[in-house]
Length: 429
Image (spheres, helix red, strand yellow):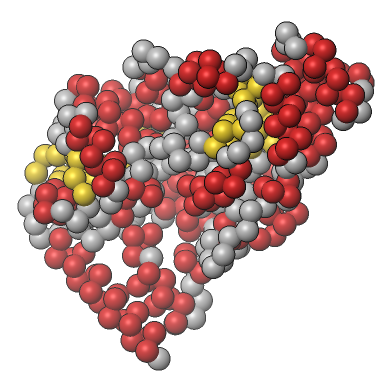
């Protein structure tokens, strides 16, 4: 009963503060933020664009003092969420631009602002109100009175609908409309800031070049698995990747073949990378704000169920799906949308570590390497046959043909410059 009363009090207080925030006058400026208090993803790159062309006064809000300090040192306007200026701008800004929920900025002060959810992925797995299984089901579809009150009091920001969203294709627009309970008129058709920024503003230097030089590497592999949200409510998170990989064996192979293996865990699992930081040529980059600075220079993406591969369709990288926990994931985590079962596959689907190692050797054969002796020695260790190599290469070529179809499916409006679109949007409001 005490928890029930506490939830009632929290609900009343939250709704009251949110309602009152709608009474404050709003002025022409944009507050912006990102999940986990990071400086990352779509909101980051739109913010940087507005620092270049000054279309609108853009202010970054975060709960991370280090992020605020770093941005301030670069001459950008940035404030802590609960500082006097942070609260003031959250209460008075005409626009909220964020990548997950209004809490990326301030979930209590957004009423009355025009809220634009830039989101942080493509809808491959079910999101928000389309979720129909797993631990997040009770957030969006609570059943009992107790669950409904709990969801209303603890998940206020998830219930606040955006006024607009970016949609790079009709497929994405329809999925977002369903997931967020909004209509298609609220979709802005254009590309994404995170994938377009470095084409619009070319880099002066490359992190990948620096990593290659430091580690004497010739090839970059990015491993970016999805968040296993079955552990979302667990008190202690286990590390499934320790069973899925023989990191000692992988490391030896990478050193012998002059390759780098970059580990990029989901922000909700970033701490799992700390256990894997001592292997040569395996680098944990989970603490990076994001990976969009390097995705156009990655040679191979290894993922599982993550929609990151959809962003990578626009790059030249090969794509492989290492789904070592396929059965468990499909049971315990969010399901994919129905359409996902019928779309072309962008890369090989592997379930065993030995298969992954065989593929790595085969793909190295395909791309060529100066380390012929060392590579073939390692291939023999894994009993890699010539026939397996040919099969892998043949399948990979077939998957490459699917990428044009997938690109049209997800990036139909990629030709519409996102920065021009956002500039016109804020001018028109």
